[in-house]
Length: 132
Image (cartoon, rainbow, N blue to C red; front, side, top):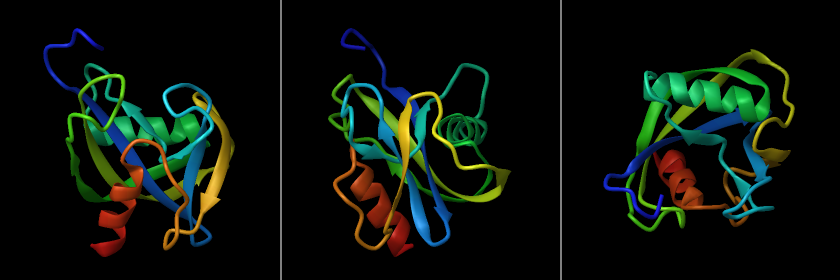
C-alpha cells in the first residue's frame, strides 16, 4: 500500500455479547497479538454495510445486522500499511456462534468501559461509540 494514490476503505464493527465488546486477537501484522475490533477492507462491489457484516462473520462467526453508524475515522496514520479510511458501525447479533476465524487468532471479550490497548485507533472508535 506504500505506493497507493488514494486511501483504502475499511470497516470496523462494534458488537456486544453478554455485555462485553467482541474483539479479535490479531493473527497477522500489523499489531500481531493485539486485540482489535473485527473488520477489514471493503471489497469491490460491496457496500460498507455488507463489508462489516461479512468481516464480523468471517472473524467471529457471528451473524449480525447494523444498528447504527458510529463514525468515520480517517487519520492518515491510523494504519502503518498506508492511508485507510474506516467506517465504524454498531451491530447486534442475530445468529451464529462465537468462534475465531480468518485473521483472528482468538476471540477476546473486553469491558467496553475499560478496554485494553487496542490495535490501530480502535480505542478512539470505542470511545466515540460509548459516548453516542
